[in-house]
View 1 (spheres, helix red, strand yellow):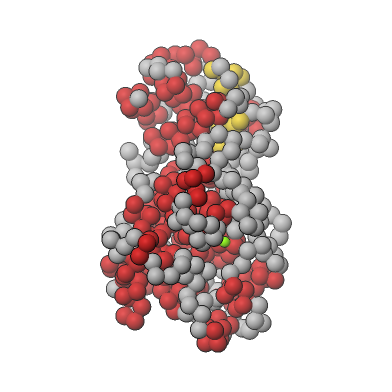
View 2: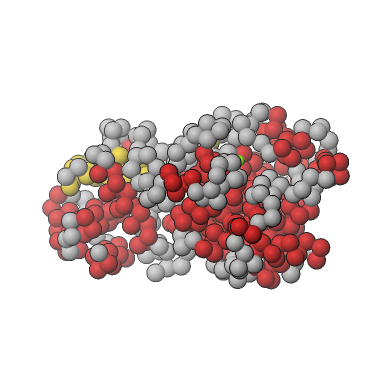
Length: 465
Ligand SMILES: [Mg+2]
């Protein structure tokens, strides 16, 4: 199996943080255990764990101030090709004036003080002596991606400077610096957990012990000495979940079940878990749903493809194009009972009551009410093909069980579409790979069999079940 590509980790970090934010938002300030009480098993039908609601009435999949501020920061970093603190502060201030539905107390006070960027937070800290909140850590992921290509010192320095724009307490800045270095290590393919001791060496001595305590291998959330609106338990809980959870879904479940400031802790944990596991590790039912506006920043709705493009711009300076051009429509045609196939435009212009499973990259979602976007590359470089295929097949099964007509498609409707259709028969009908391939080929003449890594994945699937 190929190793996870850096671009997948960068996108995973940004999308993972937004997904955690949106997933945790409905549970903000609630008691522990609410997420698992409501979703004891994965919710893969048309209603998923992206349930919306909460005190602020979020839409399902809508991200909050954590991601709104992260997007403001990300745009500044891309447009200025680096850190321009005055510009970031101006963008934050314009956002705060636009009455976002959610804004941290400390952030509101600093941005609303009418003071220059280089003194506002320090003056507020001197006056209030306010303990370090997690409001600067929650938006740290874009800068961590942007500066990861440089080195540890530059990464940690940028994190401290951005934190200081709203959080005068240097403890908050140290939390952002540690988090950013752990993201940098993960994007390089390293293990952030083993990088913790070396990272702590770079924290000034007066802050080190307190950070070492919450990041220790044997630290558990019940040892927290503050509520998780403070920066120490926020990062401590996120790192504990990364250490404890097997995959992105479990990491996010663990932190949201801790209760309290669930959107922010899940946002921080999602950034770390996404950098470690890559885009392919984020359940497509969550990535497909995440979206939101940024008050004061136009009316645009930000979605998965926008986050992926922004991550690419931060990581490599390259914005990818998603324009597929004009292609003749193929399908939809019913290939298996209740399961239809098509190519990109065959699916895009299909009846909107189809539940759509998209396997190629899309710039914009379709108008269909139910659509899962699970990008699988038609080459040998999918790092976690088995995991992504299982995620797709589990969703297909759950949506079929709800009675939906499914429409599976990719760009050409041949190879990736065939992978999902054949996989469904192997798993749900117990066919051999050869039987499944023959069955689909008879009913879907567009089936493409050139990708040997897909057929190998189907053989593994057949052996496992
Ligand atoms: Mg929030």
